[in-house]
Image (cartoon, rainbow, N blue to C red):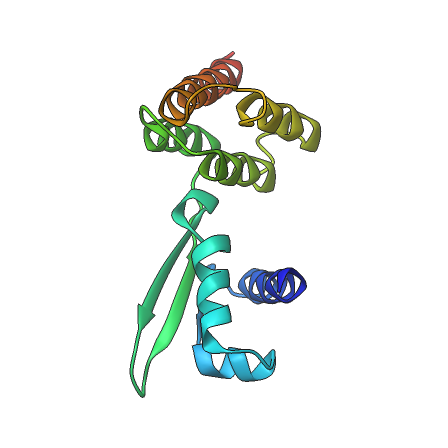
Length: 155
């Protein structure tokens, strides 16, 4: 299932790159037919790989004329960092943290190496605490790293 999800994600991202306005409209059933999978697989990929944390807005309309509209959210680096800082809040899961870090990598705000270091810092294995405390500390660590990026940007 992972290989198929990766293929669907890659296909959608390539299609998005070929659009003028970073918006793509597709039909779920046509995409499912193309990949010979169930429409629920398309839903899975959209919900896990194209979230707001990853820089995408997904709109879905069901029915005969239904479609899925995927928009890549493009904002400048300063706005991106400030938005991410606000999104983190007081508590954040490991998966959402990793989504944010991947977004920073995709937008080339951080290098691959920096991304791996950031992921290690927020990994649950390295935060050996109860879940509630771990998610709060993870948020503090991630916000501290984002604040550091914002300071470096302003220098």
